[in-house]
Image 1 (spheres, rainbow, N blue to C red):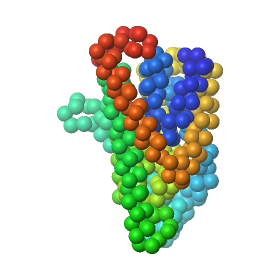
Image 2: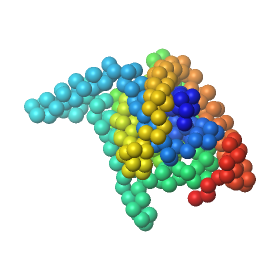
Image 3: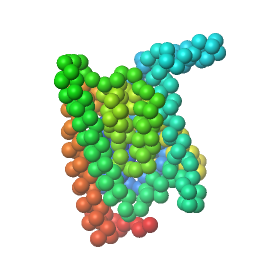
Image 4: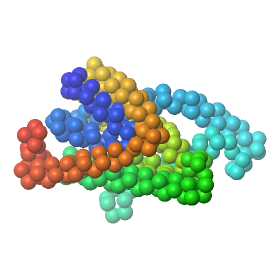
Length: 321
């Protein structure tokens, strides 16, 4: 992989990690078009995740500092006997909801009954590299489109009810409940299993369906992504060293790896800003149309390639497995 290819993939990762269009789905598409086998470049994928992790930390650094202070205050409350669930401040409530939202991720490591030791995390890895992976990505993109549409409709209905009641203020709860965090966490698990199902898009839609204020739901989604992205990077890094060995892990090349990571960080920063602006202006319906069109196109291409047995872009034969 050369530096140009690394930068292109970094841009794709940074842009699609936070916009509701699925980073895993778009990386799959671009790698397919460019003829790049990412199974041999696992550590490069880790560095792209690190780039996007830095982006969200920069955008939300003030909130992160507040959450650290809330954690220290929460620990003090517990040890002094002053902790009251119903009396938690907004930041302490958000911190607790973040922890609850992360708990469903452990379901990914629970063995599936009758599947010979396979767990939820393994499903995505089993699909990757299979000829049907491209088609699965297309259907997951369509699912993303549907979820985004449902979320938008839920907020529109809430606004209509608000108008009928005479309230002019944007509706939606600004404080999350335990069931909100659980639902969003489970949705995040599904996004980790299905390539093409946007994590930010699906979790935002779930928050909107639960009646959470859309900006609050988006901020929760992005901050929830910090430990999620970090965990994914650590797991992929572990897999990279185990699969490729210490000497072969850096086969992409340090210059290309650094270039890809920086591209992912810079583009990710502006992608977060862009999404927050589009959500505030109610212009996210463009992503509904986009993911639907791309999903249909990917499915059609995948079916044609299965019939011909070759990659339409590179001409390379498909590997059946």
